[in-house]
Length: 418
Ligand code: HAM
Image 1 (cartoon, rainbow, N blue to C red):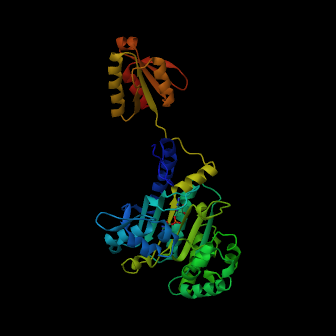
Image 2: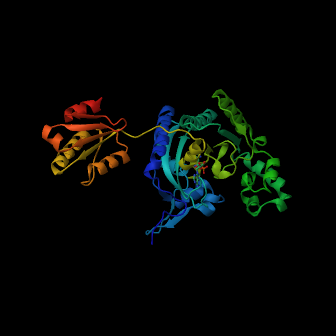
Image 3: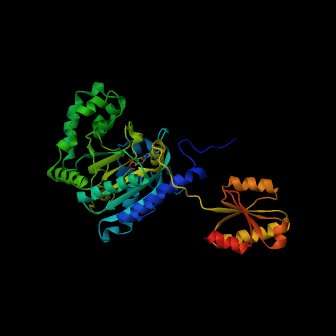
């Protein structure tokens, strides 16, 4: 039997790596500019952490978590998102004693048992960042600005920023009551999922993608018309700050996000003409109750995450050119055992100098070695034959133009050092 990668997972093969490196370089730069520090947390956590934070009624907790009992009888879950782990680590490491907000970022695998399709995997990679310990809407604006800057820096264009406020513990119950009333007499027109969710997770009815539910959601009462004074002011200030930062946005009352921990601000960044949930490139929002919900003191926070695979899909759609990361390589070919010994020594000397050098493999004909040099994309090939050995020189061939020079190896080194 020939094994394959499990359904919904992919290998990142060598030819894909430049694209990943391109994105990771941009992330490192953006995090430095905005003052975020890297954090890495375990791949699995106690299952309860995710159930408490993401919410029992969500698709993620209901249907998508990889949860297992370990040999010691503990229920563990492979991370289905990053924020809960970061909040757990924030508390565990006493980061509430540091100057607030604490700004952290992560690049990590996420596991969700979803139905695989383009841009939707069972294991995917996320870049996320969280600003913890500050309730100021200026921080929401900064988080959105940072997400936007990342996409701009890597060359994605014409993206759309969708924005909403879903209120807080104080004002949301009243809004939910209004929303339930609205849906109560329309239940015959709802899809089966929405019928089921109508009582316990009414907000999610708003972002249902089912054709029969969309018109109802469009006409539904809007959360931002039912905000308390504090949430209303927060939303107004956020919109003002985004305008100051030069960021355009669409307020969309149907944007509610798939995790229950959000309060006030929710936002998503989508490619032009996006249709369906899996086209969103990144999303986030404020989660002022989450840290309290997992046992800490009330600590306001806001964050964002984006999927690498979705970014790559969009880079490809938009034909964004990637920089060439290949390092100059010198290929060393030889004829005979004595030349091979010499070649090995030269390759080692180049490696010690930090130069990319490759020794021809096997003991093949010169023709076969030149083919190998071409295949690895070498810039220069150094050839050591009997004559060269006798005269204490090498033949250096420029692989782009084909010119050859007989040189002492030290001369080669100085040429290559530039
Ligand atoms: P999320 O919207 O569930 O948010 O995921 C963030 C991003 O991860 C999505 O916008 C998408 O790019 C990518 N993504 C999600 N699921 C998949 C999948 N199955 N396959 C490929 N890519 C996927 C969160 O996870 C929140 N923790 C974001 C956040 C951070 N909120 C506050 N701080």
